[in-house]
Image (cartoon, rainbow, N blue to C red; front, side, top):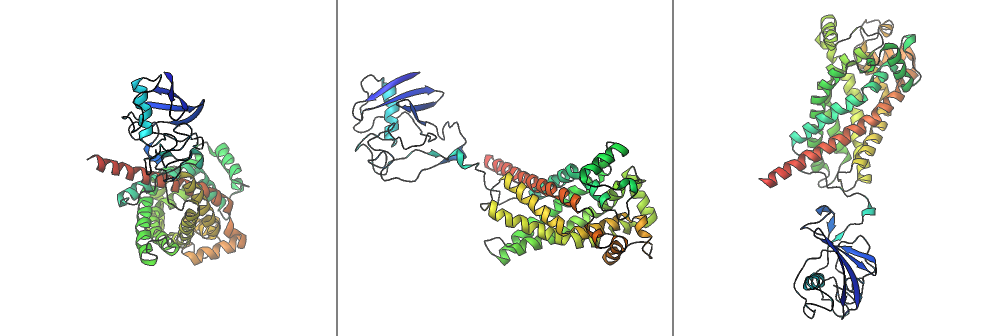
Length: 443
């Protein structure tokens, strides 16, 4: 329904369209505002903000209005939202006017009473100003990340992030393992990651790059649960000591290093089995076959033979990773809100920097895990054990360049891997904590 209202005192004209609990105001055919608000808003409550007090208002006159009146405020942007409710007449305002029904007069006077403006002298100092919707062109507004997340929340979010990260990136991880081989079979020499994936699937089967995924997912869940829970707890504790009330890069790096101890302790046996199943011409087709063979032929210690090397690699990796991530977050997300794009970008950059810097250590870890037969021929002890032995063997077999075998695949693997891990972790941490708060509020 459309009707034209005339106010003889202020001489302005409005077109009021009513429907489903809201009114849309036009000035000479131009949109002036949409009534909405907490009691029936068509927009999320979080997008409402109270405007600052204005001594004159866009239309001049008092703080609540000027000579332009409600519809004469042409300085107001089109997206401004006005809450219009039916209210009694304003002092000095007619209960009904020429050509207006009582209902229309009550609606218009309700706007005037709430400070939308009555014309020159009609404004009342300190009168109410309507809520204003934040400019949608200013970008998405996200709620702050939860500050009171529990240890259980960190563990659940971390476990989901770890499993999803490893499952999505597993084919690239298979290629990385093969490209780090010191003396690969001629049929397993690859120029780049895409060629390697294509050749593996074409010559060995479509699902060959996924062999060993089940043991990886089994280890990644508890490993990342401990990893993120320990990191969050220590980061807060150390930051309060080193830099109270602020963010400390030293605390971030130290927390990441300690969290790595727990992560690798849970993940190392799965890494050994996974990498042996990923190698070219691997004799193992099932996880149980690999576990049984390693246990019987090399003993239980074989599952942790690379643990010290893994720590030697992952401690600096995680220190660089966490420090870079937190540093980038300070620049791209200083308010620490839940912002998926910043989590993805910062996680990807942090993973790339840390991966490139620690590639030589990853090559040594792969050698310790796989115990390549061709590499063993150059080692007089028969088994490669420990960091020094691994470094010496790598140099003997391939020289300095051998330390950077697979660096391309490693960086390509870590960029999306850390981006997925951080974005999924922050999402589930935010989601779980928000649901917990809603549940407590509803009790």
